[in-house]
Image (tube, rainbow, N blue to C red):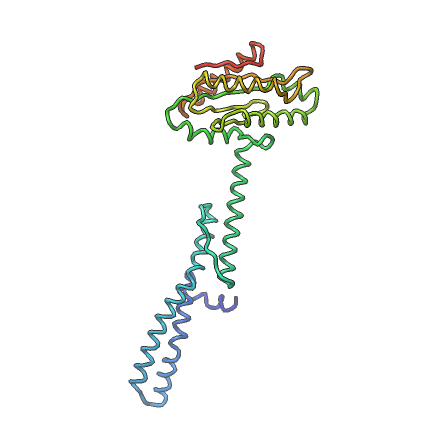
Length: 282
């Protein structure tokens, strides 16, 4: 570190040029000594001077090219680290040898992998519901944005577990959490691969059914509702836990807000009509 600090006056903003200047001086040392000795001895051998000069110039060019190549991985590692600091995606890091540069590249590769994993964990935490593993409201909105980019017929569903408060009151919040987790699993197994379920909040869930007509979406949700009767996930008193649902057609992302409001209105209509049923609006 002492030599590094002592030579910082040479190109303080460019480490490569600093190395080149030091090597340039070292390569030219023989011809400098020759010139001084010739002056002291009051003689001059032009043939020897010309040979030394040519050899020095060739050596200088060779050293600069070689050093530039050797320093290329260091410069590349520096660029990758700066990309990491800016939060930009980092391309695959090349593998080095069993030397200082190899250790530097390996460190950058580890830092890149750890940063990428940390970013993915943060993204999951920001867009996934911790309890159920489904998308949360933010994750749902982000996921459906590209799906609704094109003008095509889809259906949005808003579901609410009936009398869920009674489950918490009678059996405790641990049982309520278990019911929410089981219902989330049921959504994942009963719905199609293309459908996008999410926990909207509390005991309320949302589903986007892409490229689906309203009658087809109603059949899918009715099938889900029937599965809760066949294979119960919880009870409120002596009755099996059920849900109410409202469906509405959505054609693009711009119309999503109004579709959610219509689906929510249909949901409350289903609850007013006695719960455990599905209502839909165009």
